Image (cartoon, rainbow, N blue to C red; front, side):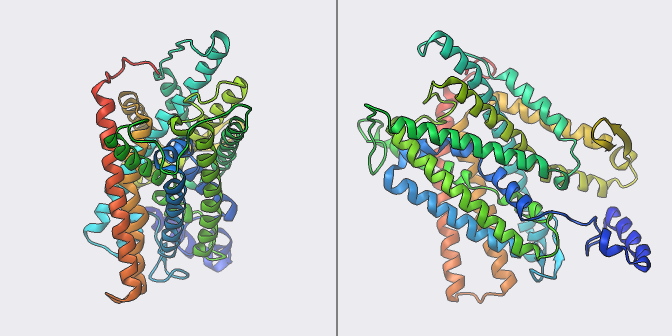
Length: 481
């Protein structure tokens, strides 16, 4: 039994006589959870409506009017369906009164066990690292776009306005070093709500600008049922690779299964967490799907087959420059919060493992109370300070070496979508419900699983090809954005 749980359990037993345990602690001896449908929905929206929305016009341009929206709706349905399966697995063996599982790995350990636990850990935490690197890249691009927007407004649209992104990556990293000292997910709801508001704001601005551009006098761009035209816009090979990459971008745009269990662990126990989480998933996925379809399709209508990879920072729009600036600031603020939503599970995993391995180390386990102006008492842990600061610095350095936005998005989405969003939820649902092998339900769940594996493989192939192409002409620390 973990030392923290032993301590809480002892305190609970001492409080039983006074009857205060129901008021202060949950059924597992931990401090009473206070999460609600609102906070869970905010966490989901913060995780889902991210930088992916900005590449959807480009993705639709590669796939066209038919396949583009169809792929968007397909991924939204699959994501919602498998998230309901995963929500039922938070407790085991039953979804209502079973034992709590605090992380995705704990859930897999309870339902599947064996080597699959290790595979889940590798997939989840590698994905979280990848996402935080991607968000560092995207946030810096948005901050650079503010400077470039002002430069274009002042010097004309033909000006070079070449600005390095590295200083802005450093600024973003410094902010994350400070915010990373927030102890855990339970203290993060205010930041997620702020980030969710920012995501709605910049998505709405992008949508509004796209509508204005598409409805403008004399506006005419080329759009087709099948997307970019072979022999006109791209070669046959480029068409295939770009289509694969677009599928990866859309897959990433819905990815939040990596943090679903941790979000569910913040919820109050009444009503049952699984029911609240399913409602939060429905609200989050429905809201984001509406925004995605609108931003993707109207963005495609505005830009046609030449849609930029990121229609706010790619300068599909130049005016009004102040509105473009505001939208890009909103992106950066949103990514500040989204970074924390994705890295907190990784922080918690490493710190829990280190506490279990070295329980007597004061450097790892001791906390020192500090008075922070306007914030009250903060418990400083030296290991948390050093480890989290080091992590932020390392991810920022990797982002500086590897600043390829669209291809990086597609690769992250493809690599994480199948194992974390599809495979493990389906396998755990089959194990939990004891679904007979070769029954109708078993067969169609397996068909869904294998189909998504194929989609993930082709999306990963497209992204890797794009990265190889970009790397050929790239020199680290020497390019301008």
